[in-house]
Length: 456
Image 1 (cartoon, rainbow, N blue to C red):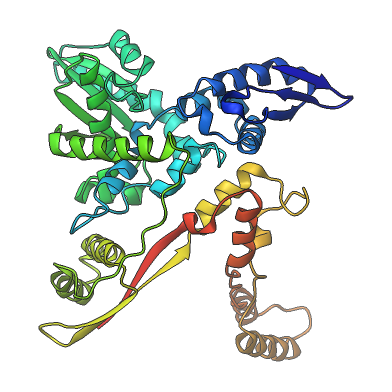
Image 2: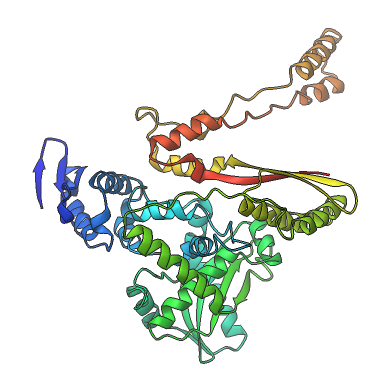
C-alpha cells in the first residue's frame, strides 16, 4: 500500500488482491491514516476479492462524508447479515413458495447484496431510527424498573452480549448480531430489543407484531445458540408516548420459532454464498400467474365489509389491505377483477415512489445538482390556491371594503379576512427525485413501495 499527496488531497491506494487495480480514495491530508486503516479493514472482508476498486473508492469516500463517526462499524456490518436484515433473508428464502413472504423490511434482497458488495453507500438512520437510538437508554431503564417492581430477579449479562456480538455464528460466519440487551431474568436468558415507534406503528404492532421484528429476534437467537448461549425468551420493548404517565412501555414476548430460523438461515446462506461471495447481484423476479391467488377472494370479501364500517374498523382495513397487497405483489398481478358474494371488486396494484424515504437518502449526501445544496421543497411543485375560490373571495372582500364606514372595521370583514382560500401544497415531483437518486448511485426502483386500490 502506498500513498501520494497533493496540496489539498491525500490519495490512499489500497490493497490489490486477486490482481485487481489498487483502490484510491481522495481524502484530506489529516484523514490519511484513518483512510489507510479503513482500507485495511475492507481488505479483510470475506468478499474482498469480489469488490470492484471504483466501488470501494466511492463507498469509502461517501461513508466518511455521510456518517464519519461510524465508518468502522459500517465496514464490519458489510461482512455479514445483521438482525435488522433478517426479514429480507426470509423473503429471499420464500421467494419460490406458493405464498412467498414480502414486505418484512425496507428494500429488496438485491439491494442488500449491492450494499454488501459496497456498490451502495450504507443507509444512515432516518428520523424514527434516530429517535429510537436516542431513547434506547430511557426505554432500557424503564424496562429494568418494571422488572424490579414486578419482583423479578434480573441482571444485565454484558459478558454474554459481548460474546454474541464479537463474532458471527460459528457455522454461519455471515450471521451477525448487534444486541440492545441480553438479560438473565429469573434464571433464564432473554434477548431484548428496544424500539420507539410512531403512534401509528405502535397501534399496528398491537394488532399484529411486525414479521421483520420477529425475524430480527430469531436471527439473534440463532447467533447466540451457535455460541453456546441458550436464549429461552425474546422480547420487543416498545415505548408508548401516549401512555407515558401510566404505562410507558409495552413488552411483546416473542417465541423462538425454529422453522422461521431455518428459513432465515436458508435465505442468508443462499444470498451470501451464491451472490455476495461470487460478486453477483440477484435479478428482480418477474412473476405471473394464470389463476387468482389462493385466499385473495376471501381478503377482498373482508375488505368490502370493512369499508362499510370504516370508522370502526380502520385498523383492520389496513391489515387486510396489506394482505391483498402482499398476495398481488407475490403473484405479479397489476390489476384483477373478481366476482364476490355481493357484486364484484377491481383491484389495481402499482408501485409508487416513497418520497420521504427517498429524500432521507438524498439528504444524507446533500450534494445534488453540481454540488449545490438543495432542500426537499425543491422537489415539490409550487403551492397554489383554487383560482375560482380565490376570485370569489377577492370580490367579496372588495365589496366589503367599499361598504366600510370611515374608520370602522365591522365584524363581518374580520371574518371574511380569516376565510382567505386555503393554500394547497404542491405535489412531489417524482421524476427529479428519481434522477437525484440516480445521481448518488441508487436505483429509484429500490425506493418504490406497492400501493393497492380497490373499487367495489
